Image 1: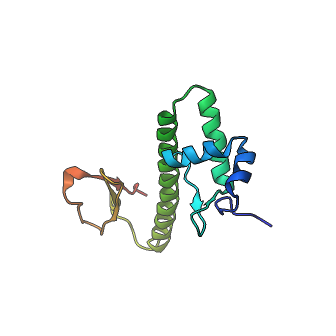
Image 2 (image 1 turned 90 degrees about the vertical axis):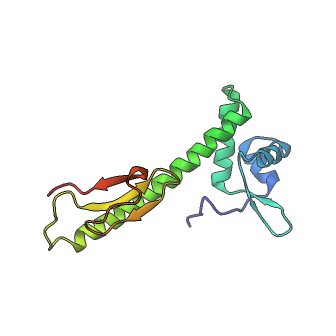
Length: 146
């Protein structure tokens, strides 16, 4: 049986024991936004295996001399990287599907696949020949010539 690493299954005392920390430390990390557990009915904290791994990473960084604010920022950036990696996988799948769909049609040189905005990381699909608006606010990804 495979357990979902993101399933909120541990109460705070169990998560604290698994992470080798005091429960009050976990509460402080929650208040500071470093590790945010899920909430069960009645507002009780529920930690996942992923949360416990994050707590261990926080402990490692703290022992290395990183401040709590530094740890919070590192964790925030790691979450952004994880989100972006998932988006890359999603877009790669869409690109592969588009390539398979368009295999029978010849591609024009440098035809656009999608554009990415500079703020917010928005991804916009573009029709062939369409330009992103405004031009100065987008990065355009080009399909390689075959």
